[in-house]
Image (cartoon, rainbow, N blue to C red; front, side, top):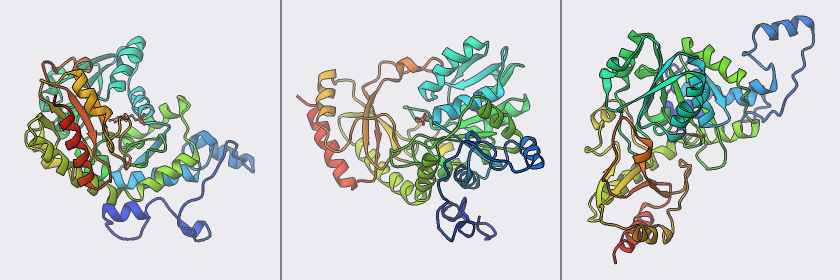
Length: 393
Ligand SMILES: *Cc1c(COP(=O)(O)O)cnc(C)c1O
């Protein structure tokens, strides 16, 4: 870490989590492959057993490559410590399991990433943990849904597929009064544009697979905790047997180094495309947190430093499946794929109606989720214009 007094985020991203002096002056940390860690003396062995989560103890718990990534992310999040997990979903499930047991209750945002819902409905339910879904716009009224056994309030802002922005400070204030912890899936914004812990959350979860890795070439989850939330999450991660490969940690750290130049470009290009789309006759609605028709746009302006490349567009309801298929099958630049956050542009038909229970998504036009990558924005617009033309006829 740099010796500057208050390094800004762009500086932290380039300086944190590396120590060239300990490594022949080489800029990046080496990739350590390890399972067995040798302890020279009984005293050293006993010291390792006393502090299982500090230092190099066991391959699964990480090597200096893992710790370099965890330290850099911790500094960017302004958290106590960060834990690396093998995927974003593993980071979500381990964080939930850290805080609930049979008889407990979870308040889950209705617009959560769909597999987060499925984990609650298909796994935690079987273990005797109940989940209630709530409207992402609930704010401080979350208090009316809190029960004595509510241990977790889970947030994801903006929401998956429909992009509602949550008032996390208001939710956290009520949750904390009744002793629940607040978890935040912050994958869309990354800590570069929104800092969950500074806005009241106890745990910030990132599918680093997306913008942190940034090149569509490895899976990773990063969970950053306050001091109080750290040990439960670390223990759950260890007991569930999660460990991440050192090559993947290296890729994630390499991706992180350029986050501060990639995200502003995603921000700018996506906003241009979203604005262009909102003026097209085929479009009913553009769902993008930085547009003022987005639910929670005021909170977005108050709490977020910028927007990223992912948003959705709702077409007018007049188009058939065949017309939509013709549009999508003919795209040249925007490809169909689920995992976003790489340098490339994506487009994907989505139907939120079957992944909502506390809110409604019905009688709406076809929805397309779009990720704007780092291509020249005029080429992206040409591809979309030709695509919208294929809707006709
Ligand atoms: C992709 C995604 C995840 C899951 O991440 P993986 O690394 O693919 O498991 C979790 N939350 C959100 C919001 C996501 O977009």
